[in-house]
Amino acid sequence: MIIKAINSDKIKILLTTSDMERLNLTYEELDYQSPSSKRAISEILSFAKVKTGFDFTGAKLYIEAFSNSDGSCTLLFTKLEAGLFGEGKKKSSLAESTPVIYEFDGISDAAAWARTCPLRLPLLALYSYNGKYRIVLGAKSAERLAPGLSEFGRLCGGGLLALSVLDEHGSLLLSKNTLEVLKTL
Image (tube, rainbow, N blue to C red; front, side):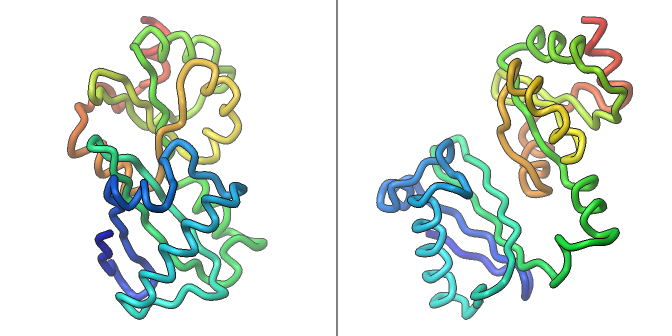
């Protein structure tokens, strides 16, 4: 387990494949409601507290997770300000600015989804990544479109860290009029 403090409210943790096995954890099974995921997260945060002094006790956390090609997993924990998920502007601004990434096995699957999409939305980008296709859109749009997206593709990550990995290791195919172009394929 490799722990790196990003700032006073954020840490990045790399779980190696052996860490994942020891914690009986897989990226695919990470879930807020899963008791085994909760136990693993608690153990990870306890270890992080010992190693870095970060104390997340009682804090609301924003957790980002993404799988790495070698089977390891990277987690980013961010302490949230009090009231961030309460009433007010911050909630919607977080939801709109948080990127969500869906993966499709082929371009035809992404195009089929686009043709069924009932909304005109600002789809941010289309990437090619490890022989698959990934679309990036805002969390608010992704939430409304989740059933259709899940029919043709699968949620594979979200947050700025996942997007930066995609930017670095993927190939940007479209960044303007992405939805409209996909509908024509």
